Image (spheres, rainbow, N blue to C red):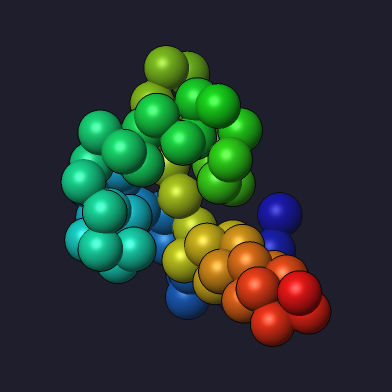
Length: 67
């Protein structure tokens, strides 16, 4: 485990990820369950890393501009 990432890129809840993405918490949960956004599953809990979400956003931006 990368200790730097664990300290400087803490896990976010679905609510926090929703705030970050400007989406409803339930939308984030639905997208995560469908595999549309990156998630970390700890038991039954969903968590999200800001860096993973940033990479996901960047890929979507690149696809949008490539069309």
